[in-house]
Image 1 (tube, one colour):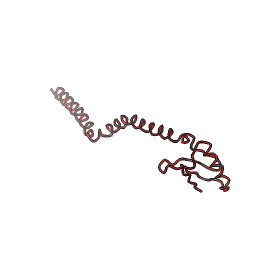
Image 2: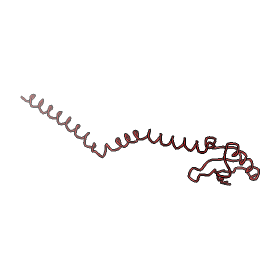
Image 3: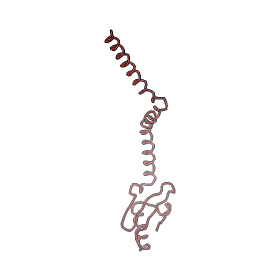
Length: 125
């Protein structure tokens, strides 16, 4: 009889342990804890759409101003980039011979198709 009582107590303790472990593992899973997975899924869903918008924007900019495909230009004397926010060309001068370099830069910009009458050039020294 004692063995049977001990056996029943062991079974009850095992069942209670399993139930306790099950509910304690679920305790942290509230709807708020699932939100990051939902956000990840939305980002994954929206990324191709955003990529398409970006691609179309760049394609339009390249059609309007083909020289953008040839920028940036980096040399030991200067770096030329396009500022999309200000819609101008920005040149960082690295050489001390600024007058000669500015002439070289103007020639290079004309060579890649920049209309210096309509596109502003900003020099940073």
